[in-house]
Length: 453
Image 1 (cartoon, rainbow, N blue to C red):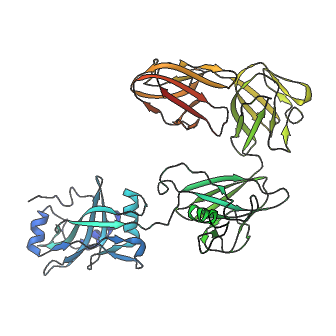
Image 2 (cartoon, rainbow, N blue to C red; image 1 turned 45 degrees about the horizontal axis):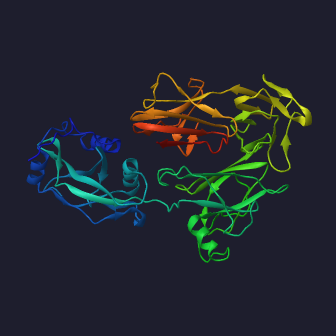
Image 3 (cartoon, rainbow, N blue to C red; image 1 turned 180 degrees about the horizontal axis):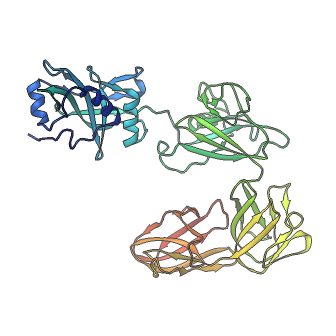
């Protein structure tokens, strides 16, 4: 029979430790023992229960096993839950029940809160006093199957309201990382209210949106998320399914709206600046700078060969009338255009300060899969007409990413379809000859293709 050490090798929870201190106040320190043999001697045995769905448990305590109490012994009890090489110990009452909240936290800490069936290997244990010594006895191991309590989180959410109208099939989609929604429950969107108006909106989940698209923009009993008090103006709050109240926001030109659908909460950040600006230079290449922060600084990459301005929308443009301080390589031209020395640059525009600068950029690939390994970038070649960079080379099994100017100040990684400058992950590849194309003209849609020949 397997033998287990008791207190010397056992890590108890903080709550249990406090409980043990009270229990052991008048007895000697606990001793090592053959726990299963002791359990048999005391008549202590346990058996499992049916699948536990925590979302359907209304009480504060939930039954995790049934057991026969040790004969003629005063005892306290605990349930040890083991999964994925981790152990969590929960105090248990004489009816085999543990705190629902503590059980929920235990499941979430190991498996997350996705509401699917999870399996723990459980061990009911009794702490008894034998001949003046506190002993821990382990009953027969039991399986503990549980579904954690979690809200329903859909894969997509949409904003409806005065930016687009109040029909449920014309919403604006929130962005999401693409991960499992129970691992990342954060959704985000930036919108502009109609000119001269406050922002008013509600949220609809994907199921409602799809139902409305087949029902003329109407919904019958489907979920729409609002708030308790219509237009209360709070920048943070709780979303309520079926609530009549619409959310209102003021004092912004644009608004960043964030949802945490695990908690069913929203947060609104009024913004003084547009989320992106288009660089207009008369070419057919879309060149977009992205707002770095809410202080009016934008960044992007582009080949500049002719005079250019910036456009926020059809009505608002920025030129040398607003951007008066021009960095090296830039001069003022006719019609308010900014005229560059032709080249490929990182463009840094500070609208708040009214200044612009450009930095010369040469892209390359680097990584264990590339010819230079992690020590040196393999240069890419620029197509001036498209602003794209490319290289054809032989790669090894390994990883790669992009970096500028053979330095780590600017580097790109992540997923090929969605590159990021925020220390994105390395991208794995297998050995072979490849053509790699990098397109970062649009700061919101930076991507690459890695094509094996």
